[in-house]
Amino acid sequence: MMVLKKEQRYIIFALLVLAIYLSPLFILQGNAHIRVHDNLDSNLAWYKVLSRSGQMFGGVTGVIPQIINGYLPRNAFGTEYSIIVWLYSLFPTMVAYGINQALTRAVAFFGMYLLLKQHLLPEEKWLPLNIAAALAFALTPFWPSGMLSTLGMPLALWAFLNIRNGEESLKSYAVLTFLPFYASIVLGFFFFLSAMGFLWLTDVLRRKNWNLRFLFSILYMSFVFMLIEYRLVYSFFVKGEPNSRDEYFHAQLSFWHAVRLTIKNYFLGHTHVMTVHTLFIVPATFIAFYLVYSKKLWQQERTFVVLFVLNFLLSLWYAFWFYKGWQPLTQRFHFMNTFNFARYHFLRPMVIYASFALALRIISLQGFSWSQTAKWLAALQILLLCLFNDEIIYRQKPTVKEFYAEELFHNIKEYIGQPQEKYRVASIGIHPAIAQYNGFYTLDTYNNFYPLRYKHQFRKIIEKELQKNSTIQKYFDKWGGRCYIFTAQLGKRYMIKKDSKRHLKDLELNTEVFKEMGGRYIFSALPIDNAEQNQLKLEKVFVSKTSAWKIYLYRTS
Image (cartoon, rainbow, N blue to C red; front, side, top):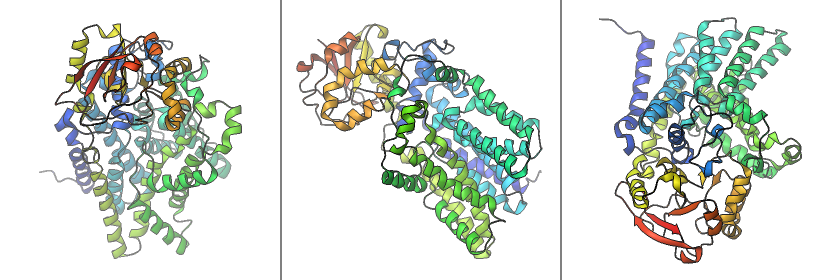
């Protein structure tokens, strides 16, 4: 009988933990609870719309007919050469979702493990710490549609450091070739690659070493990304008509507000790159930094110190990107508004968990009791991350099946009795992604890249409602990614469940504009008390045991 090596046993144990963590997705399928924000309310519906649109390989000037009267550019849905797009095209939604989670977390684990084992903690005695830190990193509640945009960074760094050190292998270049097919350059790798460029430049200045192999590898991966993300490149460099990004204004915070945001981001993180590092990782890194400081270990622990400082600088950069002091530059250089340079903080998950591993090593070296403390910190961090499983965190939210409510919307479609492409709908109190997922052609949407003229036309429908509520007025006018039927009464609430007893009162919509745009029906999650004043007639109320919503179907009169 073959006896497994210690390393193999640790790896199998880590993969078993990952399998248990992911099991609810595969067991529960549509009855699973998963993230709504920037997930169920958008990306998952987009993949379904794209797969049935006939525009998977549409031209760079193509459009998606189902959304906003065909004004939504095909390029808004990204490249057809992304693996995640094909997962959702080939498999049912929750099967694709589960596979995506499994692939991402497995690559995240092995990527971080290889980085630690080969470049940061190569000694065999640190094997348990390497496995623990890698497993913890793989369990972080990453943004699902980001794929390996952040969780693939350790694997990419492993490959780059191999090449930088003269170990130019096919494995390293295979990694640099594969990752662009399962990651986004704007959601992580633009910032990572520019950081690699900075590392190369630092080598040139400090070591007087041009290291052309390293430079070529950075350029190579950038080139692969450019080929795969050709739609993004086209949209960025080819001047088209003004789009919704042209009215995005990010530099609005006061100095002290930016300071507070720096502290908040440093200790709590960000929703798109959640690291869950507050309770155990922050104390571990602070203890390690104190030990380095008190024992004057700056040179011996130089990598840890660099990562410790970098972690804070990334939060500082993130917060101060929104500082109003940038306004003179953003007015002069328009791309500073349309491209989100704050996302350098997307490097933080890799930085935080690599520094966590190094901190545990520093703590372990202080003696037996300290070594036990380090092990407990690692174990508690893993346990905490397991408690952040979607099935636990989102248990009060609708299940996937309840959210998309396919039975309910099938009944609405049958009641209307016309081909869905013959009329347009909009939603109040629920995300328009729900109607889109169920095949309806919507005038409302959640996309951050669509023609500005459409935004201005749609605004006329809700103009009076925006005037009543400064929060939604600012939200729509200075961003507009959520092109929704906002109401002053509901504000930014668009998940009104079927057990709500509320009514919409004093609603003021410009129904004439709605009809001019092809609008025929409104799916409202609440009854509209003054429907007649808005030229709306209640057709029927729809409810289902498998739906989280009750839909009041209104038709324009």
